Length: 362
Image (cartoon, rainbow, N blue to C red; front, top):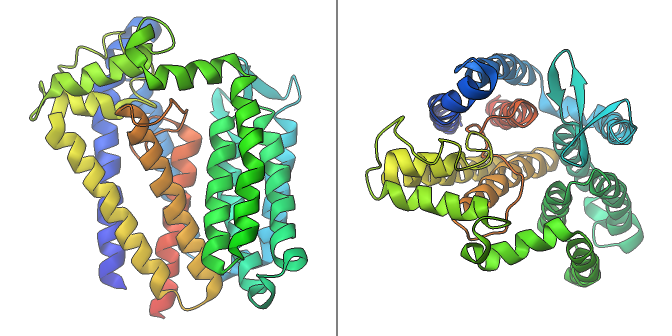
């Protein structure tokens, strides 16, 4: 699978390089105005990238199947961090959410660690329980208990996007493992009222949904980000206004270097640039799926599939939000958006994916 590894690594490298250029382009003026240093976010992003490369190479240096021995401890560590982050004085609160630890001037989001930890745990569980996967007590219930505990903690932060994200990925993996469709269907039916209440009882979530349905109806309020994002994408036309020449990044589009960086790419590099990013993610999913298909053991198959789902779904949601096809969610664009924790664990995930393909060649 050497050719697949080279292709996958090249795709990730191109996405990372695009991210470096666009983070500086989209954040430079904002950073200069607010922090007095136009390269503030770029420098921090480069530091995260350096750490991420070291971690990625590190997880490629051992047999990934060793992770099965520590699958449960990793998940327990993740759950412990989700509990600690909710405690005032330990977890850092921002804009009404308590999702981060503040360490030496840097923020760490434990939910990003939990995404990888739960993938490892569920992959190990499905590999061990292949003969009993269709059994409710032995196959379905244990995973649902773990998922329920993790999602309960993430929703308390509150982080509705991550909660839905984890639930969808785990359910897809269960389906791939051969779980009875009636169990999955019943779970979906039970989730509908819970999702409805979580949206309706939180005014800001309801406002996001209503803004998604018609962002221009409240273009100065709840629909502001979506309207500015669509203006940016429309302004770029086919070839873009030129690298560094975005107007929307001049304090019009909030979070231009994080959740809505694709909109700046579309404005500066046009439809051609935005489509290239979409094509790169499609190629990533294709090559990742090839690695999963060729994995020789069930653990490798489920782990590779989960990683492809994690990164592919995150990219799909971010792109969907940017173009107005999905309600606003706080999910960054993998490898491109500014965001330390997400970048680090996405690079670790890629290292695991390359590790799986490498081991299968031995």
